[in-house]
Image (tube, rainbow, N blue to C red; front, side):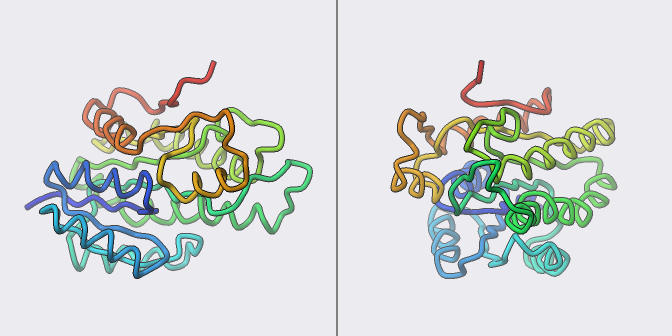
Length: 234
């Protein structure tokens, strides 16, 4: 039976590109994002390419909904073997001095709490099978904080800290944990559109999501590193 990959944050940028890359490798694909109609269109497009893909609309800012979401995916496709977690920003950055607790709490739910709840659901099965992967795409501010580019970064930094610890704990049990920090605008993504419209993308490089999807394939195949930043930041 084919393995299952669940793409959490299956937007028009990296999410659908990762789904396509792994789908071409024979994985059955679960696409997860908030808006049902566009998500089903993406699933249908993948099915037209010969990829077994299904849409599962869900709000990833709601950690309490994770158990039901995982149950729906496994009922339709089977146990999840590979997770890609990478919800795209849908808001603008903020200055650190303007970041308030309520806003940070929303980001922590989306980027940290839901991921932790998700891993709690899928990790025991991966360990029992002796194989699996948790792959997380984040922005480079998780690693390199920058003035006036706060908001997402503190939540992503907390996620990175937790992932690094998890990687060390389970590396010998067949489950690979890795994170990719993207130091560029991902072409075609919602975040790219927001920052271009806002004038905030000037001077920032743009990367093809298909290239990043290929990078994830190599990191998953080689399983020789926990983290990579692309493009490299000096």
